[in-house]
Length: 84
Image (tube, rainbow, N blue to C red):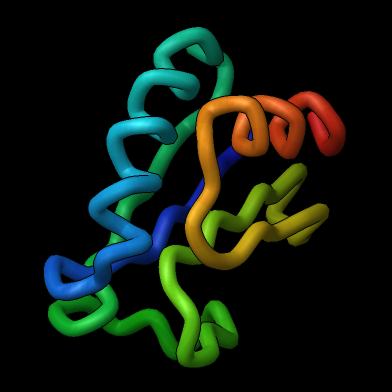
């Protein structure tokens, strides 16, 4: 399993979500995490709109879920558990 996280330094929702994500993801050693910066990296393959952050879960290379916008620890954990 893999998670792609797309955020930006200027994004207030990212500043709140990123620490919550980092706290939750440390409990999931089996998930590979790839982080991208919206402004610095090519994220065109991920169909990202105007709202950040975007957290996308992949199984066997296929997208199985995504959450968009500011999320807390519980919401992130529920997302991971729901699509895991």
